[in-house]
Length: 309
Image 1 (cartoon, rainbow, N blue to C red):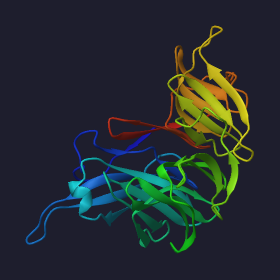
Image 2: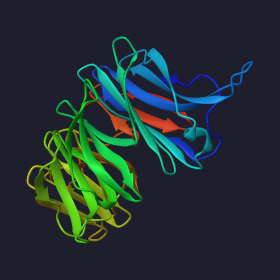
Image 3: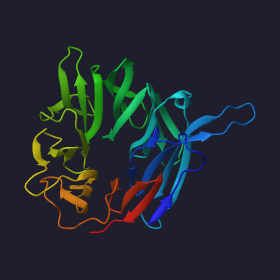
Image 4: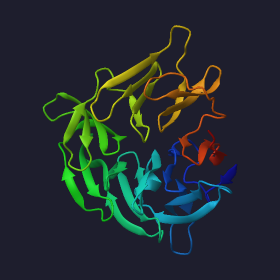
């Protein structure tokens, strides 16, 4: 078990500045933190994102750290979040989102230097050599967009979507929901390389957050149950609701065919393709699982538990 923490002072001392779950990059786990830089001489205090790469194998220590200076609006935003969106082919993507602004960075995982910056972009997916997300536009009407991962060059741009919500949904797929310019509802699976629609999502999942398990399945969890969807076809695979002696767990992570969560009897794991209980009970309910470890984020500290079975 290992522990690592960011250096310096956090940007926020409350829940209005927070970090989303880390991501796996080869044999390292990437976690970004929003931090402050103190005033010095004629230079005012500022804000940075500190990206920490922790080895996913024993002794689970930081392999490297790097910082990127953030724009001034981060200091004045009432709500701000940071996320490591993903990493592929030597580039890690970190996105910072505030009350009404966003910025995304491409960071070289070998040199730990900044490759590119995309102001206004809230990135949600790194897949197939692409960074896909929502670009600021008219109020509440962002544009789905795709950029080349290595260079940050724009590759495609979709139609503006009012109230858009986008999430990664597969090895080369994102899901976008909202209203089209003509006022009709949209809840579609898009190809990240072209922005073209692959399929519509099953009805009834419009307000439900879904997570790709990095294998075959899109798992959708909400307060009333869990559902699973095939990301290639949009087919509904199964639905888990309370009843018949079973109570749906609170999902914490999905990975490689398993759904991890906290159930009435402690940590549980479900089969992502069928919804059935897995025979081996996990020791904890992790935020991130890999072949090497399960990670739990508690009280702003990242704990690593060796994976087994």
